[in-house]
Structures are given as C-alpha cells and as structure tokens.
Length: 311
Image (cartoon, rainbow, N blue to C red; front, side):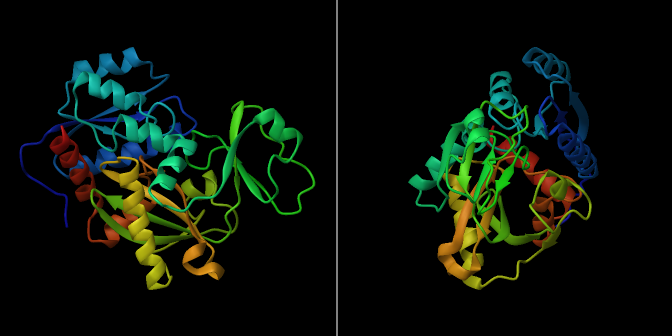
C-alpha cells in the first residue's frame, strides 16, 4: 500500500515537543510524521510546544484552525488525556485514543484493573511511597520499580533476585511509585491498527529494554515476525486486540508482553498498552505496518482518516 496522493489535502497540525521526560522522542516522532504526511498529500504545520500550558495550545490551534490534529506528543500531557480533553473542547478531530482510554492506559494501576476484568494476564503490583522503597524491599525480589504514569521505560529500576539492598531511586522519581513482580522471559510486542492486530515482533537487547535501547539506533534488534510458536503468536494478537478494547482505545496502539517460554502459554503476560507508540526510525509500530505492506506515509494517512471518521 502506498500513501502518496494528488487529491486536495486536508490541513494537519502535528503536535510535538511538550514538557514531559519524553520530549526528544516526541520531537523525533513529530518530524517523521510531518514529513510522511506531506508525502501523503496533506498540508502540514508542525506545532512545537514548550511548557505547553493549555492556553498556548488553544491559541495556536485556534489560529491555525486545522482539519485534524496529529498528536505526536509523548508522556504526560500528550498521552494522559489532558491534550485529548483540550482537543475535544476545541472540537478538533485528533489521532490516537480519546480522553478516558488515554488516561487509563497511562495509569498503570488502572490499566491493570481493566486488563484483569477482561481476563487478561498481568503480574502483581503495589503502589508504595518512594521513600519506603528506598529503605526496604516492599515485595520480595526480583521486582521492578517504575513511575505509575510514565512511558518509554522512563525511571525503571530492576531489583534482581538475591539483592541485598533496595534500589537507590533518583531524587526526581515521583513520591509514589509502582512496584511489580519481575516477569522473566522474551520481550514481545504487537501493534493494533483499528480493529486489526498486525503481527508480533521480538525485541532483543544485550540488557534491559530501557530508554536508550528503544531510541538509539542499534540499541535493540527487532525480529519480525517473531520466531515463536503459532500458539503464542495467536495469543499475542488476540490479547493485544482485547487489551486495546478493554481500555476503549482507538486508532493505533502497541501492546508489550513478556513471555517465559519454559511455561508455555501460561508464561505470556501483558506489560502495558501504549496509546502513543513511538514513530521514530527505530520504532516498532511503523515496522509492523511496513511488514503488513503499509508504508509510513500510508500509515500516517490512515491515522488521519481514522481521526476524521471518528469526529
């Protein structure tokens, strides 16, 4: 499928930047998306946000009056329901998921509750005071400590089995954090595009799939399709679509899994759903779309059309 078009173009404002810890990822995603949308035939304006107060966003979008907003923001403000609420108030169609689904997916505790209610497998976790986590093991190792509402593996600590000391969390970690049982195994991910789960990619790294591994060229190796049994592939596709629906997501999402192959199907668990998957040259969702025959401009065009159809 090709995204090139000679038709009269809709105007698209691409939101990027913002104040979150994932600003640079957003800038990279936004530029890639804007370039691809131009190739697809759209009139594109790049809207680079700084501190991104609500009145700044309202003023700039009111001046532009775009037909649709392509939301390339990541992290807080951009994918937690805040910008989505502003866009609803402005009555401007926008890509990706809506207010509630975005807020649920960003809040890892609430997302897990939705997954459990849908019969989907997740690991046990607790919310604890960061100060307490620094003092003692709040659950038995091995475990993972992370912010409850950040993405891109920002602020993730792994405490290995047999560790004597609790983690030395950075001073800028939130006052309350999620502590969850460590899930061993292979890293798998599946992209959902509307009502279709595309494929399964295995992510291979020399260590933890952290921020640098995700966004540095060569930081990880993506195997698509993943070399896994047909039963596991089918389960990933099914669970990703069910998780997408459990949160009420729309547009494009990506669901991350861990699979302990020694346990077979029982070893497959959902880590999280990303409502704003990265769109950088090393990102997973565009790779899966390309593997399905959908080039990057076509993927961007589909996302814009999907937003307009839902408006």
